[in-house]
Length: 115
Image 1 (cartoon, helix red, strand yellow):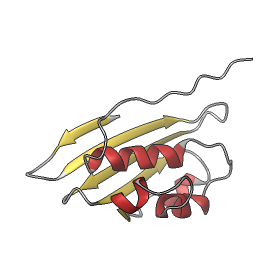
Image 2 (tube, one colour):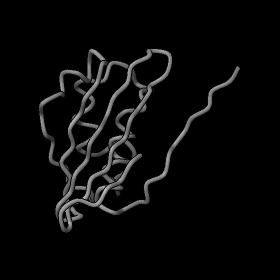
Image 3 (cartoon, helix red, strand yellow):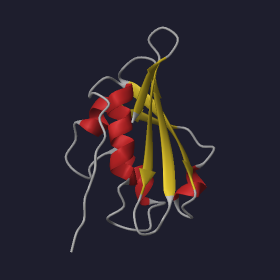
């Protein structure tokens, strides 16, 4: 994740997700002007998430990030486009929102799978 301070109080966080065996990559940009609300934009080569390109989604960061698992606007938005239940992209969007609104520090997250 990359977090950059922009003009005044506007902040931005970027998450790039290499989802795994599907080989798809999704970039999530989250921006906030007030540290409470964030606007996210998606760029992806995933057939599901590519439908989100060009659309800005406004999210109440506190409501989304401090909710119970799966019970927030981010999950509702992504559910329409997500084609795999274990996809890490919705979680990455939440992490980017947290960073953009200064609810979390920018740190990488990883999942290691072995057999």
